Image (cartoon, rainbow, N blue to C red; front, side, top):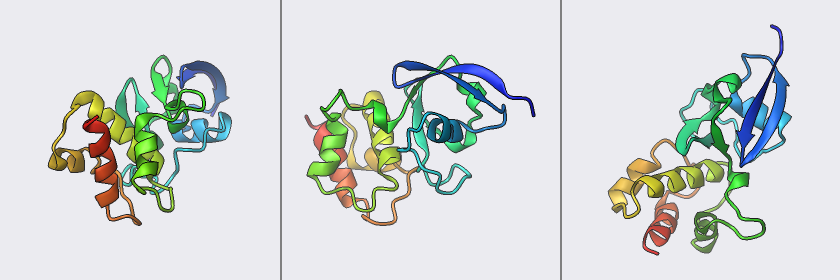
Length: 154
């Protein structure tokens, strides 16, 4: 397949990429741009480890072709912090001990940020539904939900 050149706006910066049109957004973000927060867990969009935001909406980047994301605003976990200052959701996950192995956490945090953008004061059930696309095999979700509640309540 012939490679294509296109521009991706990732974390507020334009990146010209030269890649095959059948590469996923996840592959390009990780392999070409070296932003490794998003992980490939299942490769089928079921686990949420590859979650990024595209135009502020949750997307499983393993299922999106990279050229289809051209011209859209992509946010990865690396783009949430403001320099050295963590995003409030990132800090809440640390403060509440919500991180164990860390594999799911970037996607979980991005899903939480998108949830609060849409619904700034979700109930506990709404939080659980908001992160339902992200599987965590370590924490049991209690501390994750508490972290999200703490940001929602601030």
